[in-house]
Length: 638
Image (cartoon, rainbow, N blue to C red; front, top):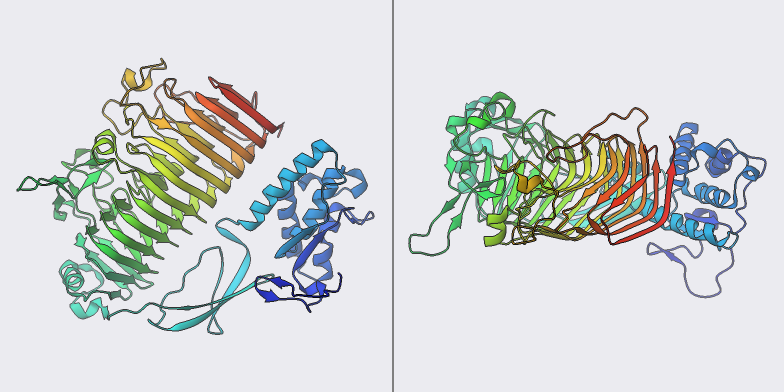
């Protein structure tokens, strides 16, 4: 509002020195709130949008969204004089939020508040900053995408993909929405050749066995070449991939797994070196080196592999006996995509569905990127986890969508045998902007984590309808190398997730001794080489509505308590129609209903700015701890 006497004012690298204030895409929150006393809270928040003559339905949606963020939903029909100072401050903030500006300017926003309210408002501003800066799977508004000036698509998700681009070509990309415009330039990579699978004799009719044609094409493709699958249904037995290859499945192309189990070769788990050298590993399942049926797409000790496009990899589990008779099999079921000791693997855009068991299984691999994928399997399909990276280093799971019969993502690092002999932890994993719809757990650690997990960040995700949200599961017997530390879960929205947070050191599945007294005994047993260790866990910026069983259920071992659990800037609202359920899978599990924050055998518990709405009984129950810090725990009825 003042003239600039020297220098330049830059916003996102753009000089806006001479741009009128109203066109700078900034929002001002004044020290004295500057609310209109004759208007309702709703009318105050909608005022700037009304002046812009935006669609009333759009205005309504934006006001309600801002009110929910700021906890003002029940105040919208009141006048400013009926609100407290802190509430009026939030209204002033909400009036800016609805504009979705690039910059918020606050004029001493805390100076009019007392000391207690000042601290609470400071926390709200920090949380607001994180929420507005870090949207989840869906973008704040719909947008249009232009490539070299031509509109190529519309979207509403934070991650989108473009295919069919020309190699070694410069492109200009522009994204435009009602209140956003972003531009960038990029150049596509080169390739040695692009070959059509039909030219190798593949029929693509869904009946002809195309295995030989596809395998020959894969084996013959020059390094850094691309094998293109046009629309069609390509029935195939298991295939072996090689290094420096790109498989592109066009929209309408389906790589369809053979339903006849007898035609799947058995891959050995470990083969001994004839000259006495190190063993060579080839197969495994449920974190043990063991024989298995070969996966539909398998890569062994390879690098620089890409599987991309808008097509589908279909395991055809629904038409086989992989889902119905698997307990009778002589060996482990195949995965759909299996990468053993590979480097630089990229999966991008494809739909992956109906695997015989786990859908994507990177195994002791490095630098694995999975982007904008879609996973699906029926709710009752057994063990159809979507992504199970095991003992991998450098995994990115970005913008993916899940609806499966088991865990959406389960990070593993071996049972005690592999955890102690190979001792390869899961390291440097990032999960971001994903949508998890249905599944036992959304983002899961374990239970087979014998070599531990470190440097994991899960953020900006949307969980909807899963049994559990953030799920850590282990048990006695996973071993001393089972150390989980440096794990953060931030800025996550959950709807209809029965138990948003579960940390379980009493897991009772996947092992022959799962029902033994060693697993279930609540006595303080000696800590030894079989005892797992749980380190620090940070849960921050979670907004959970429609929970039913428990807000948080963390249950450590008495001989090796969880080191630290921090719960910060979290809201959990229970469903009024909640039904009892089991918060964790353990022996003698008890059903719970609308249980608040329950933490047992945790050394340090930190609860900061947490709201629990509708819990039955106390909102916070902590047993067997050394240090408890609470700063801003609010309990509300429904």
